[in-house]
Length: 437
Image 1 (cartoon, one colour):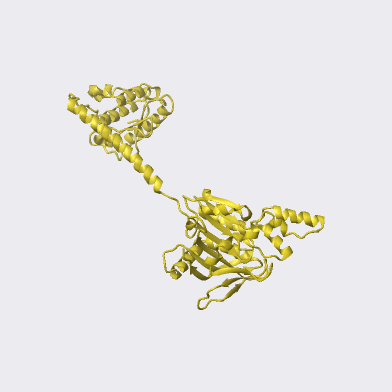
Image 2 (tube, rainbow, N blue to C red):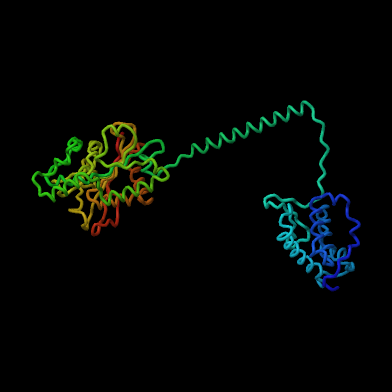
C-alpha cells in the first residue's frame, strides 16, 4: 500500500463510535485537531488518531497492538506480518510529529495535550499544567449522591474539626521540633560559644608595649587607671617621638596572631558567630564580667585581664624582665615534665615556642572563660591553627579525657609550636591539667 497522502476517507468503523464520546473533553480535543489543515489533507492520520483516541478513552488501550491497528485502520488482511509491513509504525511517527506541531502552534492554548509515548500506541492526555495529569481510562461515572441526614452533617462537622485540630497540632509540632534544633560549635569552643549567651572576644592591647620605655611591669589595677598608658611615656621626649608615643597610646592596634585567632573563632562559631562581640582589653569594664562568656587572647603582658584567673592555672606565663625572655612556669610538675618551658627569645626566630589554652569558670558571673595565650606571636598563631583543625581538637579532647577525673568541662593544656623564621610549622601537646570549678 502506498504511503502517499491522498484525500481522507471516513473509516468504516467510525459509525461505531460510542455516543458518550462526544461529551468527553478528551474526545472533543481530538475532534478539534481533526478539523485542522494537516489532518484534513491526510488520508490515514485522521482515522489513526480517531481509533487510538476511542480505544484509549473507553479504557481499551490494551487492545492497541500494531497488528490490530493495521487491520482496523489500514485495512490489512488478518494474516499480515507487521515485521514486513511498517505502515503502522510510519504513520504513528507522522502522527507524533503532527500532534507536536499542533500544540506548538494553533493548539498552544488547549487545556489538554496529547502524547503518544514511544513503544506504545495508547494516547496520554495531559493537563496544560505539567503537574496535573489526566490519566487515560474509561469515562468516569459519578455515583448518585446519598441523601444527607442530620447525623451525616454532624459527622462532617466533627470530621472537619478533627482535620483542623490535626493541622494545628502538626504546625505546633513542627515549630517545636524546629525550635529544639540548636546549632552547636565544636568542642572546646562550645563551652564558651553558646546560643543563649553573648561571648566577648577580648584581644590584647598593643599600647602596652609602651611599658618597655620605663621597664615597668603591669598589674591589672594599674592598667585600669584612666591615665595609665600616658604614665608609661617618659617626659621630655623629642616632639616627633612624643607624637609617636601619643599615637601608640591612643590607637587600638593588635597583632597578626590575634587576627588569625579571631578569624578561627569566627569560623568555628558559625552559625553562632552573631553571638561574638569583639572588644579590646582597654575597653573592657569590670562590670562586663558579670554576664556572658569570654575569650581572652594574649598573656598578662598584653592582656592584663588574664591575671584574674592566675590562681586557677598550673601553667603561668612569666617574663624574666620587662621585654626579656619569657617562659611558662609549671607550678606542679608531673613525672616527665619540666619546671619551666622557655619560648623564643624574640619574634621571627626559629625554634620552639609555647602556648596554653584554658577553659575556666567565670570570675564573677555564670558564664565560662577561655584563655588563649602564647609566649610569642608564633605560639598564639600555632594555637589558633591547632584549634582550627578537627584533628587537633580531637587530639586535645582525648588528652583531656585521659587526665581529667571528672566530667568537668574545665581544663588547661600546654602546647609546643615548632617555628621556622617566625612561622609555626607543627604543634604538639606537652601537658594537660583538669581544672576544678
